Length: 73
Image 1 (cartoon, rainbow, N blue to C red):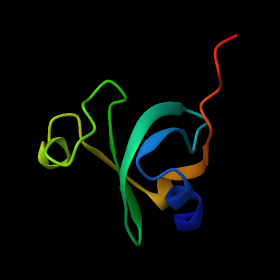
Image 2 (tube, helix red, strand yellow; image 1 turned 180 degrees about the vertical axis):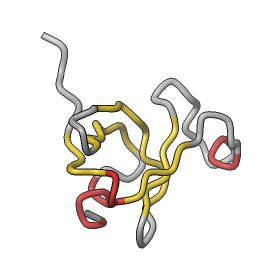
Image 3 (cartoon, one colour; image 1 turned 90 degrees about the horizontal axis):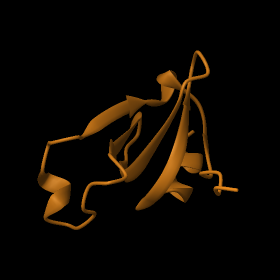
Image 4 (cartoon, one colour; image 1 turned 90 degrees about the vertical axis):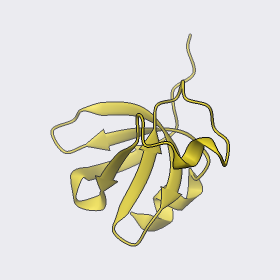
């Protein structure tokens, strides 16, 4: 899962959680056992990456996949 998450580092992705829930998030960092995300609407700069507002951590055990965000039709 880490290799998959690394492909989406510093961009938007669709996280697929166990239970089939899908969440659009900005992937800010990839760790050994987790991915750190922010809301897509949040500013994506180095200074903003230290702001805990909207920050969510997802462990790889919570995820079934990370995929491209579908383009609107």
